[in-house]
Length: 295
Image 1 (cartoon, rainbow, N blue to C red):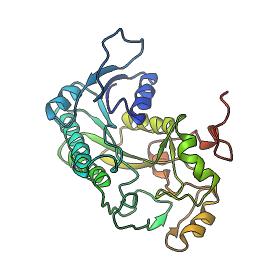
Image 2: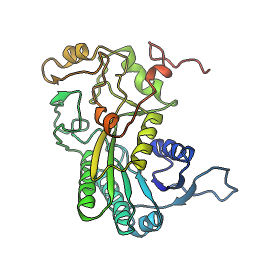
Image 3: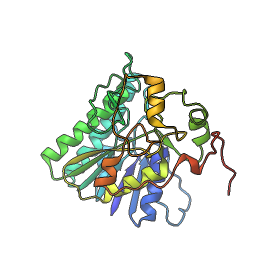
């Protein structure tokens, strides 16, 4: 297929682009970064610079695509003014999806966020109702990032009501790759009391890219939402024990697939997408959260 990948120079977009190319797809990559004008490397994606908050630029990029993978976004709410986060994320999603609908693109993969339920960046703190968190958990966002992602998912619902497009929303957990595992996850591996709203969850960027590829190739009808998280938790802790120790009875514990379960479950993606994660923090870090020697 000819697949447009937005946000192609970001952490997720870059690895997704490579994964799609390796799978034999033609990729048109787009981002805000200026293009280079030297000879292209063999097997490199065609790159087009575009500001997707401009409808004309979004339509120009999407035209002729068989699928769109929309990873472009401001990735959290604390580094930009709130209105910039909300406007950028929502309008880019609206414009790219509108272009896909109008051009009859059959597949759209929307990269949303684990933060959609709202307990990640709230101004008035609250906890998940239960764990592991799944796609049926109530959604109560407060911050501009989670709100923009929640509304983006609703745009997918509207698109399948008004057209023949098929949409899949991916909610990735905290994304890790070779360059940030030790910095981000090392403290939690050494000490389970270093808490995060996602309940010791994470996802390897390459496993995430595999899930995105499967979504782009999928013929699932309508709009489906999938959490993508590693099946194990950061540090390999006994999940029931650490949940009880640090949260008491404030979060209902539901059935676990394994003792060291993630706080977010991806069972739906495994069952419906056929996604099988193959990587763990243990491939990069030792039991003390320090980087393993390069092989």
